[in-house]
View (cartoon, chains in turn yellow, brown):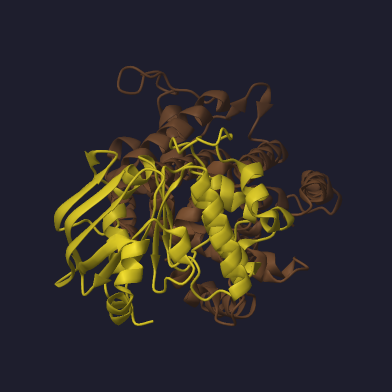
Length: 237
Length: 347
């Protein structure tokens, strides 16, 4: 579904990514792990076209997308849940969800309807309760749910979450992981960017480790068990 | 306010009804000069409200809004100028003094002007956008100032009565009601627009453009559409103003006029429905009152503006609201004066 090879990117004169390669298959959940400053968010920005790649290839659904405008990339079916949630603070929950809604052809393998308000509210009942509340007044966890809901409302084929559980209470983290597991069962492909992998271990099919702008390790859950010590050394937990 | 749209609508209609009674009140109080003054306020209200659409809701700091105000005004003036001698404009378009003709024509010209200027200006942002809109408006100002066929610097008088069907706009009360009706329609339209999905996307672009882009929406068409709509609103105001004043001059396009409109929006309450109208009211009343006292009225106006901006978070509109100003779009509820903290939040 998504295939990134030899990706290079940076800001101004500073190069951040030197050689990042990763792939997400249809219906797969993949994690991209690494410490702060190793290039996780830059990778996301490069894939989304927010920071155009300077080298390497990015292909989505078999077609190259590097160099396309970010909105064109999003329209092909990549839904981004950005780091720091970034909900629209003065719009209500409902308006946040509806404003950018679209149908970008996400999976319907579980026979469900496309994502719409009701389905998002079923996934996050708390958002239904707070439907007409202004997003700024939501708690961090609720804002995160809203950010995920907003991305789902574009019916993406691939959902990209940048540090989706950063700074959240453990209870809320679990709620979000449970939700992601449910999303995986609908056939949605998910790319998770994170610093830790505790709970992601069961959820994800494969993992990549980023170190100083390069993918230095990749493998499935079994490989992760085997190389646990080495991976810990990179991601520092 | 958001929770009680029905109650808000009732309050607005009540306000409109009260405003419609003004000419009777003026006659009763023996102060007929109030009516043309009120017309000016109402018309400036339309222009300021249209600027508020892009400034308050779209975060687009256009310093050239007078361009569209002036284009609307000159459309009316030029169409009239071709009515009297009977030679069509460019040999094609016959002159007219019918509001039913000149007003749509002004909207069209304003919209086209905004489309052209917006299409180019919106490729920039921030300070560049401010400067390029200012530059375009000044280009139009100098163009009209040098058009001797239409009065050049001296402007153009509209001597014959302007007509709207059977209504004669020479009558101050009629003019006022027509302008008030236009304001009501414009505000109703803009209120709907801001609450529509289009309006929410526009608000999203102002708050976090990258996020809107990452959702697959190209901001440019949204910004351009808002810019064109705002330009048409300003042209509507300009056309009405020329009908009310029976005069059009390059002053309507001058950058100080853009500045005045911006002051009205900020003074009244950026991003609010009635704020720009309140701002127009305050500025026109202050100007009229202060010019009676001193020729250098702006010396007094300046400090008043500073005080209002410093002490009423959210402009005059915030003073009329029971709930804190932090509910207004763009307000974050800090103690910093809005004018100073505003760039960051809208950035």
